[in-house]
Every structure is written in structure tokens, then in C-alpha cells.
Figure 1 (spheres, rainbow, N blue to C red):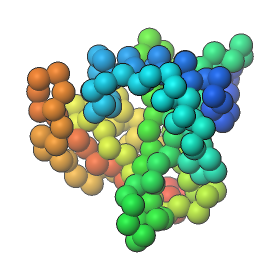
Figure 2 (figure 1 turned 30 degrees about the horizontal axis):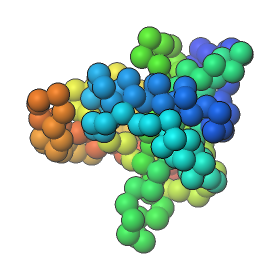
Figure 3 (figure 1 turned 90 degrees about the vertical axis):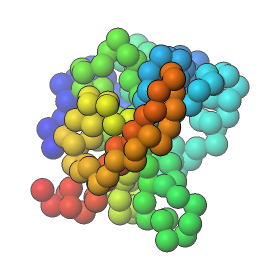
Length: 176
């Protein structure tokens, strides 16, 4: 896979001190976009607790500029709580809206896929609001395939939303 043209950006583990920046990015999506189905913005304390609670393969990561400004973040989460799903995870990627389509999301997602593979996971799932063509294209470019559409599964901004379920089988991705 080609790496994005992001030579001055780096990925690192999220710190509690990143909570305000992560909260700002996420809360914009909550209030104005359909990339998350959350309806209520996160409080700073809740965001800090979210970062603190994540460890190992589930650690949150951030993409930062040379002066350590957070421009995006991502994480892996448990896909389902049943034991047979323990080899599968779900990814989340968020980028500052005014910096979209600059390779930041791709850098974050590529890092999450490496993190998943290094942690022994077999499958990474993505749940993308179906009209989110940029997010779907990002996932496809990183080896995800569409496996289904959940119709009218959520409601936000007074309208029904579909979700595209996408899957990346990690050993198939590394074979390509």
C-alpha cells in the first residue's frame, strides 16, 4: 500500500493531554456530521477517561504536526462482546474537517491496520454512514470490501441513515 503524502505528520499514542483536541474534532462530527451516530457532544472529562481506559491493541492514536497539534485520531475497539468475535475489531478514524483529503485519515487507518495485525487480530470491521463516500473510499483504498448495507439503522438530523458494513481480512490484505 502506498503511504500518504504526509511527510511532516507522525502518529503517536494518544495522551490525556490530547483530550481537548480529540474532543473538539469528535464533537464537530457529533454536532454537524453523520460520521458518528452519537447525538450528544462529549464532555472533556469523558474524553479524558476514554483515552485513559484504552491500552494495548485498543490504545487510541493521534496524528500530529511537527509542533504536536492533533489533526486526527483513531482507535480499534472490540467488535462484539461474544467470545467467538475476539479475533475481530472495529476501527474509528476522525480527522479535523478542514484538513480532510490530505492523507491524514489514510495514515491513521494504515497504522490501525498494522496495530491490529501486530496484535494478532484476523479481521477489522468498519461501520460507515452509507452516503459517506470519502470514508468508504478511504477504507476501500486500505483493503476493505463492502459486505452489506444496514438500511435505516440510525436516525440523526431528522432523517434515517444507512450504514455500510466494511471488512478487511488482514491476511488477505498482506498477501496483495
